Image 1 (cartoon, one colour):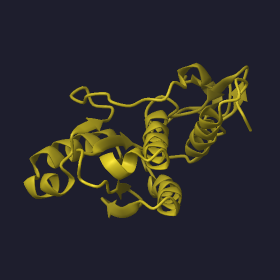
Image 2 (image 1 turned 135 degrees about the horizontal axis):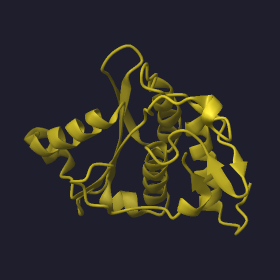
Image 3 (image 1 turned 60 degrees about the horizontal axis):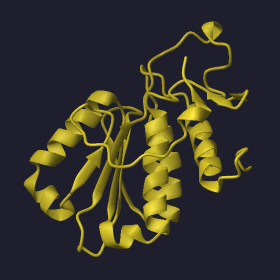
Length: 193
């Protein structure tokens, strides 16, 4: 379904974000494996290499790589897929329905951090589909929680073997130490309570 302005990328992003919101990853207990299942299915179909990491029962993180030709340093996109618990009775819309009302997408995690999960996925897919991925390469990470995303970013910066393999030039994630290098302007379509 196209958006009111007819933008097919925004329409696809809306569908992805709605699906991510519909996956209840309230932490505790998390169950982020469900987000990883969804992302992995999409990314493998698009030719990305994926690896799953399990930190505990249902606490999965996903790493996806699309290799470039090595002429440019790749882009790293990190996010986390858990949300804080909520009290559904205090919401105007069901928190895990991904309802669109008055042109606004409502849902738990829309801004923290499933919106960023969606932006990472859409950015990676667009880079690949537009041919930028063949030059630049892309690394997408969906961690099970905020702390894991921060630890992953720091560990990747310290891990010389992995950095030699990835040679990451830029990274983007929720943490304050990151440099924002890619975003899709969907803020007008998202509402977080």
